[in-house]
Image (cartoon, rainbow, N blue to C red; front, side):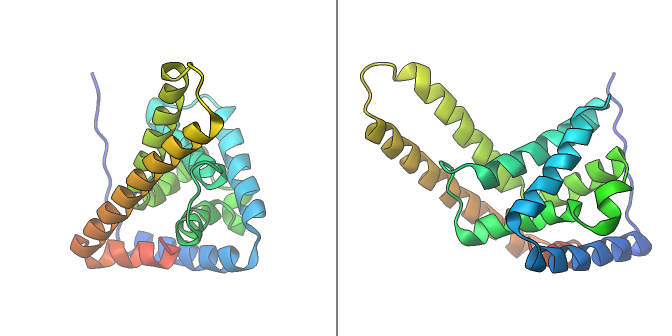
Length: 186
């Protein structure tokens, strides 16, 4: 039988995350994207080597999607979209985060940034499913340029939807949470 656990972030918690957000923005501006991605991969690797509860594994799967989407040439993020994901991944590059945070701390941070990137993650995962399904369905003499064209069309539709949904959510979001994520640059 599933059990739902929730908790409330108080003012002190929000101040803590605001401080992390400010550190994150400094890191994102001064550290190469490759170094930020490498640190996020290290966090993912540590999580993958551990025995984790399902709810924590689920969060780490989101981190994997964030890393994959920013590195996937066929997904071809715009510079702004790529920077949003890099900013999210920079959360795992803060000096305190790199070695001392627990797997649960990372899972909470993945949940926080993943909420703001959920349309991006959903669109990317749908693109990956389309790309995988395209292979067996199109085994006939498909030309590489036809495949690229089909993927480009699907990517365009999914990224447009992603932007529309993100804009809609931003327009109806409230103050404290929106302020927190705007600090992350998301």
